[in-house]
Image 1: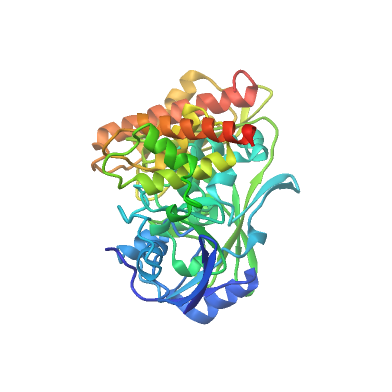
Image 2 (image 1 turned 90 degrees about the horizontal axis):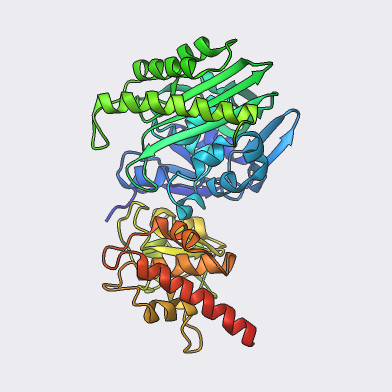
Length: 291
Length: 159
């Protein structure tokens, strides 16, 4: 039987209260939302927090809305809500691509976007999705609220820009014209972690790529931001040849390890193919060629 | 800590350890052993119960997180000596052999039909994709859920 080590439990009744509790309880306190990453870690004693602060009552952190030229997603928004949101699918269809293949419907009833991003498992899909979409996250501390670009969010394996005493409260997805996005994943069986996955976002105006984001899941110690491929594509006209080159960069710039899901050369190959496919589908969506 | 949880319509308070998982609260504190404890890793779906009407995996939720919430388990499917159409469907279509996955399958199916009374085979397969059966395969389970959907619709029309 897997049982977490003992801890103290309390419920936050406000965002301020949650942040205050984090400060009061110190380094051994953890936020729990859906719990579908943290509780398995606690059962395996890979995580042994002394205090859990439950934020499931903070319904003010559960929303998907358009505001100030961006889509804002509350940190407590659950996978099922990301999957079924037409607003999100309209502007950032890569979320629906990803959510259809994240875990299973029952797990998706509990897991949250904030929890997924803060867990920052390299094999997790939403971290790559938000990185590709060039999202920003809002991080609340006791003294201030800061906005951090996803480009600066992943600082190491399972480590993010969210610091001690801080709570991730919102994900912001800026809206720019000509956007197209897609997420491509290969998994061993339904609901499994990715063998490899690629997220891509392109913004195309007057036939050229004005902005681009590409990120990979499960082929490195962290979510991989493919900055070298992004630099190659920016300002160019989209083409199959260019996307094949971006795929080749993905194969080179990832750093997978061999495990039960496959050997290194296979995963590198997959990263390249999925990057190419994600860019192709994102472009089709941006230009309206296909949905 | 003290929790007050409504399980199958009955509210009860218990002193528990914060680390107690919902599945063990149901099975050991309340002696409701219909909910099965399977893989312990939120993969197999044997422990699915409804929390405020939504299917959840009770091995990956703390009982403490259910304080003030409503839980429904497989014991609540049969009412007044009458089986739920989902249970009848499992009987009619031989949708179980060893029965270990059955409580989770049935609660998952119940939640699906509550939300979508006329699901397609694909929708049923998607709904139960977080639940593993190692005996029958899934054909008869899907058939049982369709049976339940059809008979529920017929009963409602007749009523």
